[in-house]
Length: 200
Image 1 (cartoon, rainbow, N blue to C red):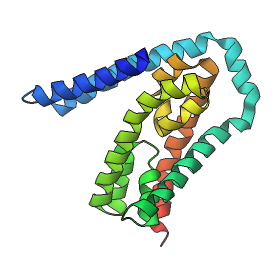
Image 2 (image 1 turned 180 degrees about the vertical axis):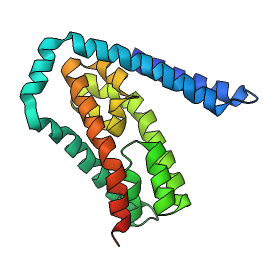
Image 3 (image 1 turned 90 degrees about the vertical axis):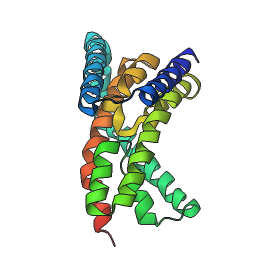
């Protein structure tokens, strides 16, 4: 609960500061975020590399490691398809949004270019909210449901922005699986979105 409180407090403090500041150079802000994320990921990398015994266990899992991102991709698209029953959107449109897997920057640009600016904006917001929700859900899921389940909310972001919190709330093998899962999902996005656009 303390971790969730810290995450929510940090997000809310950032929103408040952003609201109060007269102007912020987006390039400087992006650079600060990139640098801080790089430091966190460097720390996670050291932790993973230090636990050699755990890395051997991951290697023993072999090809079955792809079941995790496969299940996350399937669940994301299934959840999106259920959304089409509740929203005034076609099945194709909700699948396009869901196919971002949390990677809001690329998915929104691709959808804007290949489909429409309106859906691109929706994809951006939906995937931003997914990442924010992941920060809250990961600690809860890791403690109360299971370590592997905690990987799911992050989607493609488990190879970068949500990896540090997964590493902190779970263990080295789970963090390694999360990294591989995020890498596979990230690789899928630029192929899956054009494919869904092409389907009439």
